[in-house]
Image (cartoon, rainbow, N blue to C red; front, side, top):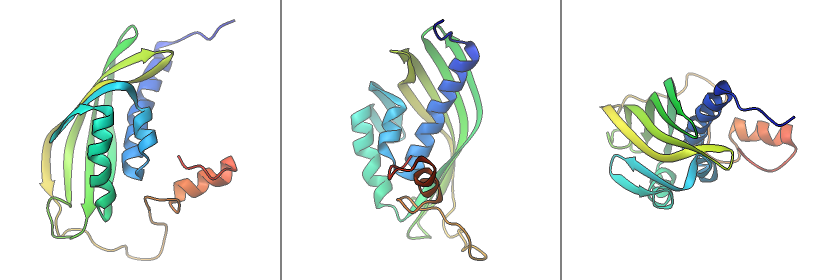
Amino acid sequence: MGAQRSEWADRQEIHDVVLRYCRGIDRLDFELVRSAYHPDAVDHHTGFDGTLDEYIAWVEPKLRARRGGTMHIVANHLVELLGDTAISETYGTSVHWGEPAGDPRANFTSGVRFVDHMARRDGRWAIAERWAVREWTRSDAGRLMPKEGAGPSGTRDGDDPLVRLQRALRGTGAGA
């Protein structure tokens, strides 16, 4: 008996696409970011419009140059299934921090919506076109404070707790 698709499974796979994108951006895993899109996808961000390859070439150096990080927090997510295409709208918060601490362009929080045209091709849901809509932005310059004590800290390399756990449980040197 062949695998039977369900509406719930389609919705979950589309939600996973959104989460893969967020993890990929936050952990600087651009192959994971790429996996959220179809190869011919188009992306529209503040300050950018272009293909997937152009988007990666635009965003990767910006994020790698930043001493700090990003954290994408996903909230409301609604999917309108239309056969092998879907409209996905995801509300969220995008937090950016970096050096110098007083620079508002390196330290800000935005309310965002990802408006995605999703498509299932060859049995795989991915972004065909994305509009990263920035609804509001506030400056967090000078507001970051050090941790109150020792404990786990996130990194954007192979020493991050997620990557170490993945290596331990998968028994490989691979990351996300």
